[in-house]
Figure 1 (tube, rainbow, N blue to C red):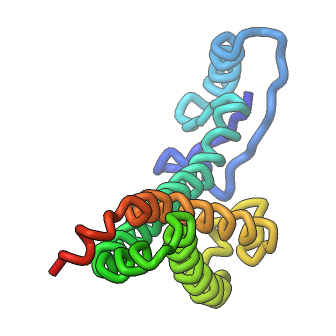
Figure 2: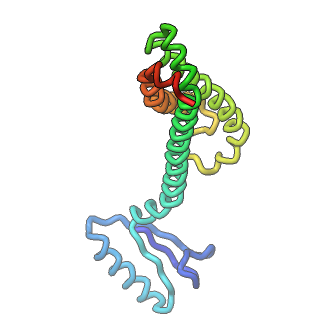
Figure 3: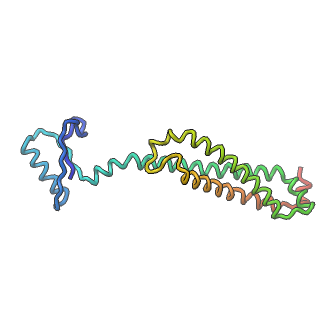
Length: 192
């Protein structure tokens, strides 16, 4: 049990006395005994009694909330990046349908078309990662107080994040490249 004299607002006052009670009894029984002893000394004395587990848990609430909030923003950012790359590559493929059809009519293999689309996506992702890493390291000190056990400029964490974003970009390149590979040269040449 963790106990102390509470202030008017229910929080421990700066002039309060704290004590810790260790007992094989259940916490409710110990709480009754401690309250009885304090009441026998001064019945008007406000007290606040809680278990040590409850006190430790209350100290963990804010860091857990911060971690959940940062994780939520990271997931949202990850989804937005994936959707953005997918949309950009889909637009690129649809706007270059005629060019892709000409390439395939002149003998380009479907594998070459897929390579062209995926390479374009990789270049976009790498450019975005470079700009994003520069901005992230520039504002890393602002997140210092929200992180626990990780430095904001930790190279391992940054590398893992960059790798995940690159993999998301590759997945986003897959569907447009498959669609580009299936372009019929005759339909593409008649397009527009």
